Image 1 (cartoon, rainbow, N blue to C red):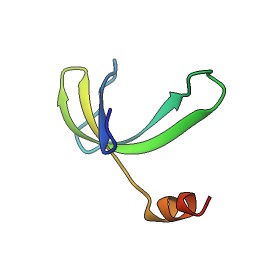
Image 2 (tube, rainbow, N blue to C red):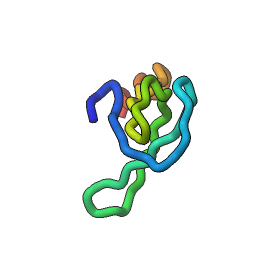
Image 3 (cartoon, one colour):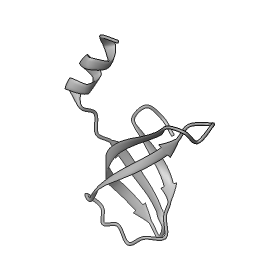
Image 4 (spheres, rainbow, N blue to C red):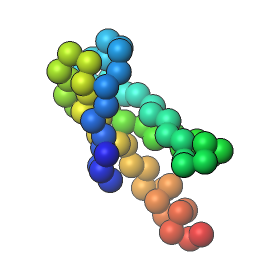
Length: 64
């Protein structure tokens, strides 16, 4: 995982270019975080997903 995306393994048939949501749990499993991304490459069940960044969301988080 990086700031720009993630490589993941999924038993799914996702097409390159498909938009997906990925949900993460924090270390105490109490607060899920969801990010949207685009499948940029695929090798069988390994996927490279580029995160979609919402400029409005970034602006709002910098105000907190």
